[in-house]
Image (cartoon, rainbow, N blue to C red; front, side, top):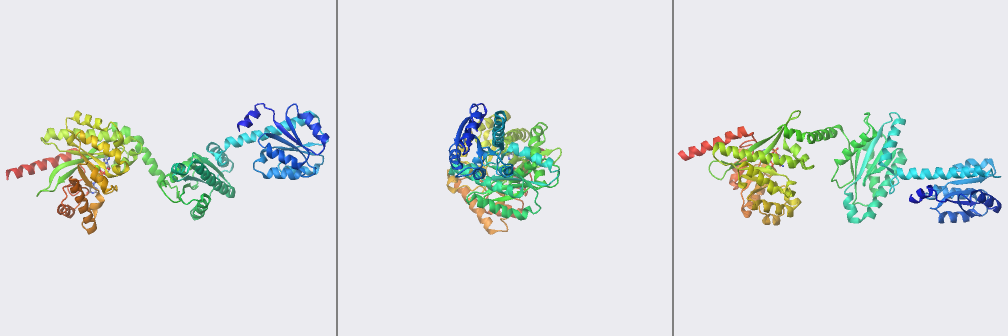
Length: 571
Ligand code: C2E
Ligand code: MG
Ligand code: MG
């Protein structure tokens, strides 16, 4: 490409003149040699040799048809059939009218008739042919991805729009193909292998487009877009297509995911169709086999809903749409359960959607850093609440807050928490910190450093959702924690399933080994509570005692507990 651009800027281009008649070669040479560097061949075989040798520097071939050894027609056919050599324009020298059509069909760019016209005419024809050929190469190369030869994204969309305009309302399907875990493949097997893979998939995609008509491009590093006439039987043909794709890849370790926006006769432009196909494709992330997903409007609505929540979050904080609820935890070791602490759980009262549970928005906010702000809001609220109840009831009820896995990486975490308790006049021991078990398994070194430093500051750590995160037993014994909260799923069936009950017994034994109390979450029924009591569980949290409550209602539970304490004292 660079070479071509330089030649366009005015370097002398090289022309090959092929004719068995010396006189013809010399006349043509004389007409052109002040503008071009000329090489000569007296037959087709010699010419082919030179063309192969000078492939990258030759700008044009002027070719006589009748020659010994290899004639002009045959040479023209060879050049036309060769992917590389085809780019060199050929002007045919002819004295007979009849051969022109056949020459054009075999790729000739133009003709010069014998006897020769005036030099100006010949120079103009030569100059014109070279310019046309060079421009078309430049266009081709800027439009195309150099590795796969497919369009690049920009031109793809441009031509896609043209197709839509020209074809009126011909229905088209948008297909996105992504290679699973491409970055890792590149790292494991090297870039050359990654490139080879892209080429293979690229030619598979190219074949499909050639078969069915349509357009294809490579977009970004590992994504392919295909815009193709609509097929009614897409779900039926997909397995065949996937099979073909897997065969093109030829490596069972590697798979692709395919997202499809099948034409639904909506007036969408091509880019929007691909946005939807991409969305369908994204839903297949973390798959290990080649599979596909068809876009549907539910998917879209969900995505729009998520987008809206992300957009609304800042305003919602300012407008105090978020409210912290508190769910009590009761100590069941004695005869009567005793209110021991509470868990702060956030609720969103959205002006349009009503109350939204954290299970809906927390995972969204964890993906984009918004959780940072929200968690700090909750910690502040909870700390203020502890203080308020202390002032009002004269007791300190510890409250646990959830610490997201992203918080664990925040080097300022300890400082921030210390500031929060300081501002609210409580101590580190009053604000319990819940960290989900899966955060421990994801990054065990980081978490044990964070946990150790928080504990040095006086904070107590509860491992949340224990049993769901596949901690190794070895890791557990080395971890410094202050309580284990059993995951709700284990509690669900303890009354009907003896294995579930035994499993909970084993987890409680682990807590004994670690010398920390056990909290069971999600306790809804009396029988569950009683069974947990026989299994030696310490603390219980669940609907059986109370759902999470707004602070004013929760205050009723404190008052009730205080009354029971007084009654017991007076008895
Ligand atoms: P989690 O920390 O494990 O909280 C316990 C969840 O179990 C709460 O759901 C609670 O309402 C629910 N639950 C309690 N008892 C029962 C029961 O008896 N039956 C049933 N079916 N459910 C019960 P919630 O409030 O919807 O919170 C879900 C998750 O969202 C929490 O799980 C926690 O991981 C996260 N979360 C809540 N608030 C916050 C927050 O302020 N920050 C962060 N980072 N995460 C939060
Ligand atoms: Mg929790
Ligand atoms: Mg939990």
